[in-house]
Amino acid sequence: MFWYRNLIKISTANKPKTPITTNLLLTSLSHFSTANHTPAAAQPSGLGPTKPDEKPRVVVLGSGWAGCRLMKGLDPQLYDIVCVSPRNHMVFTPLLASTCVGTLEFRSVAEPIARIQPSISSAPGSYFFLSNCTGVDTESHEVHCETVTGGAHTPDPWKFKISYDKLVIASGSQASTFGIHGVKEHAIFLREVHHAQEIRRKLLLNLMLSDVPGISEEEKRRLLHCVVVGGGPTGVEFSGELSDFIRRDVHQRYTHVKDYIHVTLIEANEILSSFDDRLRRYAIKQLTKSGVCLVRGIVKDVKPENLVLSDGSEVPYGLLVWSTGVGPSPFVSSLGLPKSPGGRLLSDKESIWQTY
Image (cartoon, rainbow, N blue to C red; front, side):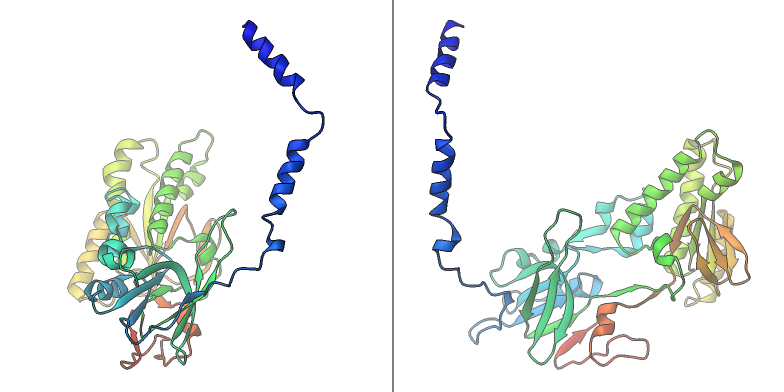
């Protein structure tokens, strides 16, 4: 290692005493400062109107059933297709309940939009923007958008505009809470993949916690009480999937707590009220047979560990899934367009294609 020690001596002997390198670097950087250059021209914030020799632009707001089905049927040789949505995939919602208990994996119920309409990722004038639409200007044929961001270290939302020749409003709806206090804070909806992921995480966590030494009998029963509010198709389907999971998996793998876990379905009227009476009776029979407790009642308040019914009784829960129907989203409500008594948009065949 003699040569190495000499190398160290040479390098330290030739090292300058003053920070010349730093000064040279600062001097060099000063030549590239923006103060010595004229500012670049501002980039256009969005997509401007199409030119006469260009294909007409169809803007689709939403990536649900209606929006994706329409995009799939559009001919990219005739139209430039632009999709604006806060999610880049379509969700096969009838199978979401199966993903909550592991019968299906999450990737099985989501289809990327680029597969449904490949032109949005390949054609020059077609795009997909991961954004929310915040407004529609029907006079100038523009939609106002804002990028979707999340987390502590993500950039601030970027606002931009898109001019359209044809506009399809298929932004969907949102879960109805009927203004009941505590629903948004403590209940989980079942409309998106991340909802199903949260339900699965909560269910497995409660199974683990209930087996910890020192947990009281009452707390075990609360943790393992799964309450579903809403007897529509989603609520009934999820209750059935959950009861199957309890009978087939929990009774085998969590034998210490198998006698504590149960499911309660709360409905204000009849379950599956919009279906045929024979189907409704069959659903009640099957749910009761599988161990689901059916309760008729109206929820008045939701607390962190229990909910209060209209008769004053309290129902403790460890997992609360809310499925009481849907209503218009705040975006749809904010639009100054003709609406039905229920708040949904009415179709204007000349300028707006509207669907839910």
